[in-house]
Length: 241
Image (cartoon, rainbow, N blue to C red; front, side, top):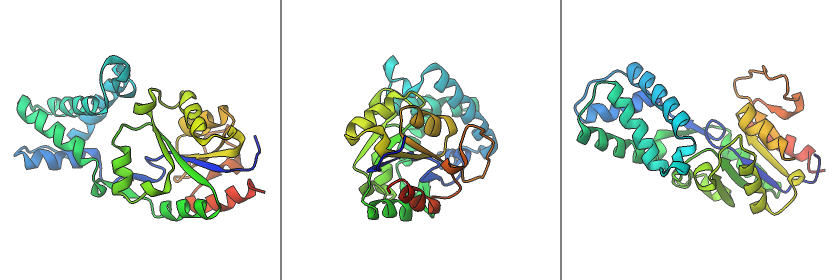
């Protein structure tokens, strides 16, 4: 799998940035703005149930079933509040619309302290960067709001690609954009299966970002595991020789 690297592909959520506060808290703020009194704990529990239900029934934003990212997420949000005894359809639609768009704002997301420096280091090494993410079409706006978009030559989202990790086809689509063999590409992500195993299954030099130092995946080689993006430049340099 070794070859002179020329590209680095990136996962985004929980790799470069994360949701700043819990979904329950953010949804509760919108509910309070609408005059409702709910607790973050009950909303968070309802959200996770709604998310699991929609992910199972309408995988990858339901794009093969006539949905798109916005309609999918608005359905999840309405379902979440419905479980919390909100039955006013006008109110449900208003909150769903507002929250969908709120998640494009920079104040909803927290960029990890080591993210920008790692991206800059990659560019300094002469590497080109792209994104492969199980995300909807808002990703470009989110990366722009978080001052990260300019680092990337292209974005491949699961909504646009029509397939989601761990389907290796999404990485094949990214490789087509790179225009180089898989051995000349690295991928950085936090998910053991979606990012590490799937990228390596197509010949990409996958590395697992393990910020929590779990080390409970026996099929991840020690040299393929990073505890911080601060370790990435040296990892890449070793593979550019």
